[in-house]
Length: 267
Image (cartoon, rainbow, N blue to C red; front, side):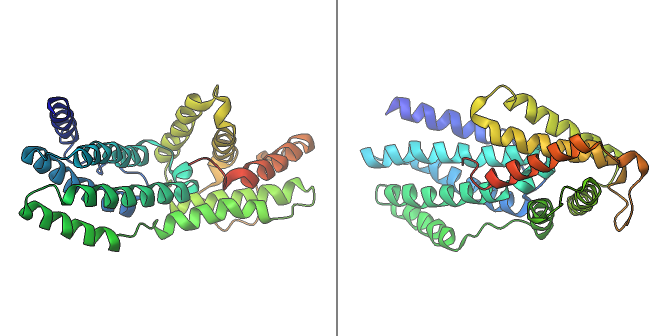
């Protein structure tokens, strides 16, 4: 029991080190704020349960499992503060799935603890369980529109036309960056740097090939069309935008590969 107490105390103290983990969020604001409210309430339950010293093996195991899922929740919030905005929007379906799993785990393990704690604490857990059933996670409309714009490239038939492909890509990246407020030179630099940093983390990992392809394609769009992304509604492209035929074919193939496999990225 001493080891468990120390585990709870150390993790609880660590969780309290950052009083406002959502202040640096880039995307998923409503999702992470909802998640943070749950984290704060459940951390309080964990500390109170530890103080009550439940003499129940199931409750102790549930306590440890709650810590594990608190870490997962905090990891999502950290992830949403550090990663590329475009990448976060494109992978929002994965974040939603992870949040649903965490919510379900919170419900399961709180239920296992409830019968092993004092009545006042059990009543507080009941309130959290009630709220968990009503908790819904949903992305911002801007994230949905940005993701939809990029994914729509896969549905277009370019007919081996480099110019039509370029116009479609330009329109898509203009919409996506506008919705995600990548609307200044500085924000564009930050977005490119975030993508490069993420690429460095997966570049030599053979298990993350689909994720690497997605990151490479998003970076390609920013590098190629960065100076045009604020010209929403433009019907023509600058002559600097024209690419050679061989490269255009490679890019069209990459769209097919990236988006075809995108929905099956591992959770």
